[in-house]
Amino acid sequence: MNKYIDLRNNLDLEELKEPAKIIKDGGIVIFPTETVYGIGTNGFNEESVRKIYELKKRDFNKPISLLVSNMEMVKTVAENITNLERALMEQFWPGPFTIILKKKKIVPDILTANGETVGVRMPSGIIAKQLIEYAGVPIATPSANISGNPSGTNIDDIRNDFEGKVDCIIDSGISELGVASTIVKVIDGIPHVLREGTITKKQIQEVVSKVIK
Image (cartoon, rainbow, N blue to C red; front, side):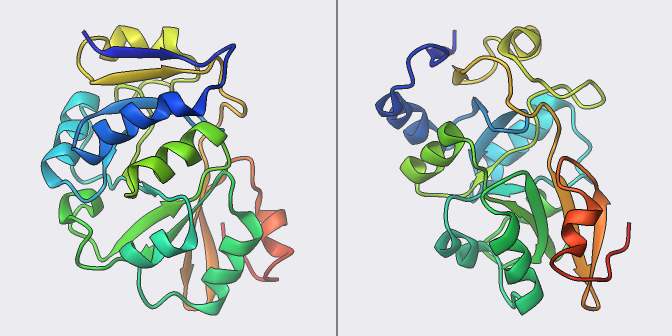
């Protein structure tokens, strides 16, 4: 039986300290972000990340992004950040914007499908952000759904797939946006939109004129 925390009507952030410790210790927690619900664990724990792949029935060739709560945490997982990448982060963070950065060796290869880059996002949802703060580590977080199914936007949809298989579920009602984040990778100084979410190509063009989608 997993722990269930109901924050739908009473947003007591102190209640996030226990699930944050679960995450830091390598446990699995389902929690809300402003986009969709995520299923997360300590991004530095290879075995915990492997468990997320298995629970989701996710192809190991599909990388998982990291959620961070501040720029100092970004520096622990990414290196050689360019001025353009930094400008995009400053413009769209916190928010539904994932940027692909060159990863540091500390990031487990399983998380990046043995690639040299890692997706990083700073969520604006208060629960997600505070959970990361309390955990003190980047949280490896794909959407809380079985791969191939729609992303979970409320706990009722998610429980059928994960009830009893994770350590904790945090419920805050229906997701604010209900759409996965925009994903961007800067290649040769040009942002490429790999997936468009609520942040559009046009908005990115306000930061840099040339954008490829």
